[in-house]
Length: 632
Image (cartoon, rainbow, N blue to C red; front, side, top):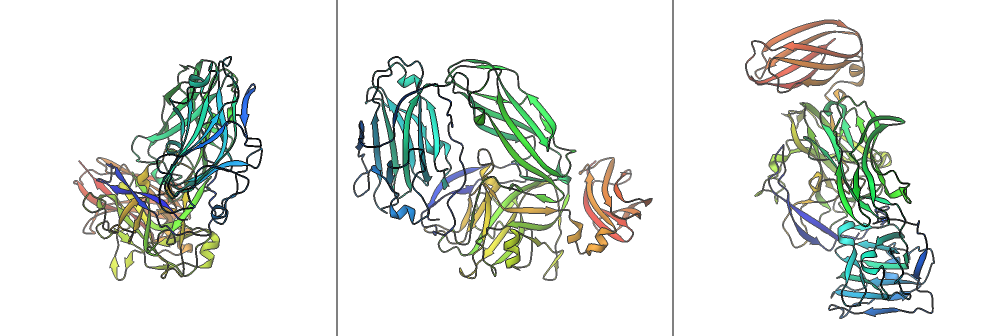
């Protein structure tokens, strides 16, 4: 990769709230790599193919009429729009093929990557070769292919060649450093400008400066369908959590989920029964099904709508789930493919992170991404716990081009350390607890991930692995041995429509022209927490299999009583002890002989003062422990 736009991470970051402010910082000399640029299909404005009739089209096949190229204010030294039949060498050599439009070559292209100085502000102007005086509705469609850096791709329409209306802007719908599908078909309802007009002009307006390119083909005007609702945007919210996660550990399922959506009526007809449907499914079983109240939306109009009930996640079992957000109406939708989105997420035994178990779209970033940052690059992913839990490892999802011999140091960082005056310094945002240096192996790369243990003692110093409720970052510092063993980490783009920018951050020790600091970058970085896995706390596998895993101590903080939830893998005598911070026994309960399986004990806290304690569970000699806060 060559170019990257980052956002400097600023603002107060607390364990319960983020005050997020960002400013752009252009890092223009990211290294090119041999990794493919195919980031998957971006969601177009509409991928409609159900027109009732074609009013006019232009595919640049000779003889080409009604097409003109207009240079803007920044044209000196740059390449204007061209009609070409092959992709220029500077683009094809970097893995970008020609646009795969239905009509094939030739196509229109503007190439910003062919020069490193000056700016472009250029237009491809197309005069519609037929009158639209009798048209009551008009949809503009075209096929396009581009990779976006900082440039903008605008499509503008006019009925007098003087006043122009912007109907498409890539900077609104396409994230930076994204390659759209080849080709992407975009359809926009332009009835308000073009319907009933004798003359119509369309122009493709490119503004860039040593950015990438824009290829356009198969421009057409068609009649809009009668009924077509489009889910243009969506969001997922929680009562307490700061973001949405692809993997939730079963021990932390205490929140409830809600959805909202932006809907566009692309069809000719007013819809009076539009509604938002939200479903949670596991396989063929529907766990939640909520319809909003019906609402009316006019043709070529937009509106927003939210679910009318929250879905409580507590009680979900381990396994793959789907969140489905769906726009519905009583009429038959002409293009149901753009009505809904399905978002996969998983309930796990221990993994907590934004990345999904199987990303629908992903890229990678790491030590080869930025010049001068081959050693000391840090990637970090947010995770939030509502119950006291034990951090036992950090899982790092690896890109296939990682090289064995690179070194990773995993750590947990408290979000309280990322404060206004300190965000530029990695050491002020220091780890709470850390792993030893881990040398990456070929087997790790083949597996696609590595779990790096967080030890209870690091270089002779004890580490407290018990985390109190709050927001933390799981981080991985990467050392490539000065570029000899580059490490790339998966960046999941599945949730790019709504995931928060602070859920993935990176640290660049020597960014070009700037001080070392933290930046927001990526979407769901492949660095996740591994919680509550007793096998990593110094017990052997056999000991764990024959004994106990403490799952949850709740409520925490507690007042009058506390519940202790645990799993026995072997029938055992169970003793629960509460100790104060000095290690003295303040309460003990002999639960007697219990059979294997899920168990729960309830302890009365009468006589214990407010403060911090430790709940210790002994099952046949195997011991698990969690912190407990008593607040009276």
